[in-house]
Amino acid sequence: MAGLEVPTWDPQTALLIGAILVEAFVLYVGYGGLEKLLGPRLMAFLVGGESSAE
Amino acid sequence: MMALFVGFGLVVGILFGFFGMGGSFLVTPALLMLGYDASVAVGSGMAFVFGTAVIATLKHHDLGQVDYKLGVIMIVGTTIGIEVGRASVYYLEELGLAGGVISVAYVVLLGGIGLMVTREALKGDGGSGIDHEAADKDLSEYEIPEVAKKIQRTVRIPPMVTLRGDIRVSAWVITAVAFSTGLLSGFLGVGGGFIRMPAMIYAIGVPVPVAVGTDLFEIVFSGGIGSYLYGQGGGVDLAIVAPLLFGSALGARIGSAATAIVDSDGIKIYFGGMLLAGAVAVGIGEVGSYLGNQLLETLGLVLVIGAAVVVAGAIVYTTVASLRATRSQRAPAAD
Image (tube, each protein chain N blue to C red):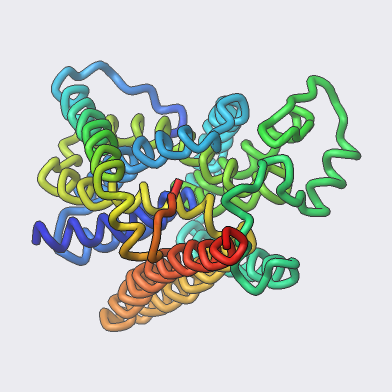
C-alpha cells in the first residue's frame, strides 16, 4: 500500500510500470483468446462434456 | 529459474483471483529467500501484485463482481488510514516497542480472522463444500452475515449508498471500515487484502465475490502507486516480474472463474485455512528470528509456500469436481 506519499514524475519509471500494465493487458487478452479456442476441448477433457467455466 | 517463476506465478495467480489477496506475503519472502536485495524483493513483488490485480480485476469486471462506487470510497478511507497506521509505527519505534507489538498483532490478527472465517463457514448451510447452483446465483441471493445486517439496520446516517447485490449501507460505515483496515494495513506494513476482504463481508455485508473483485480493484491503485515509488529507487526488476506475471495471468483467470463456481462457504473455508497457516508460519518465523535460528525462519517460509500450493490445488480440484457434479445433475434431467 502506498499511503499518501506523493510520487514525482519520472518518465523511465512510468515506462517501466506502463510496460507491466501493457503485459497484463496482452496476457489477459491472449489467455482470453486461448480460453475461447481451447476452453471447450479442455472442459470436455476435465468435466467430460460441454460446459463453461464462466 | 524462468520455469520456477512461471509456476510460482500460476499458484499466486490462482489464490489472488480466488481470494483477492495473497500476493505480497508470498512473493516478497520467496524473492528474499532466493537472494534478491530487500528493495528489489519488495518492489518487484509489489509490481507483480499490481499486474496480477489488473488481470484479476478485468476478469471480475467481466463477471460483474466489481463495485466501483465501493472501491473509490474504500481507496480514500484506506489511504488516510494507512498514513495514521504508519505514524503509529514511528511512535512505537520511538518507544522501542515497534518490532514486538507488530509481530504479535500480525499473528493474532491472521489467526483471529482465520478462526472466525473458518468457524462461520463451517456453521453455514453449505459448510460441506460445494453448492452446485453457485454458478447461477444472483448477487442479491448471497446471504448477508448477521453482524452486517445489524450494522445496516442500526447505522443509517446519510448519505446512504446502494452497492451491488442491492445492499444499502451508510457511506460512513464504509469509510469507517476503510479507515480501520487502512490503519491496520499501515501499522503492519502489508497490502491488507486479508483484513479488507473479511471486513467488507462481515461489516459492510458485501457478497463474497464482490468483496474479492472490489478488493482487487483497490489493489490496482495501491499496487500501481507503490510499484512506481519503488521503481523510482530501482526496486522493480522486469526480469522477475515478466515471467511471474506470465504464470499469474493464467492463474488469476482460473481463480476468478472459480469464485463463480465454488460456493461462498467453500471460499471462506479456504480463506480461513490459508490465514491460519499464515499465522502459524509467521509465528514460527518470528520465533526463529528471535532465537537467531535460520532453520525456523526457513521453515516458516516453506510452510507458507506449501500452504499456498496446497490451497491453489484444492481450489482447482473443487472447481472441477463442482463442474462434474453439476453436469451429472443436469444429464439425467436432460434425459
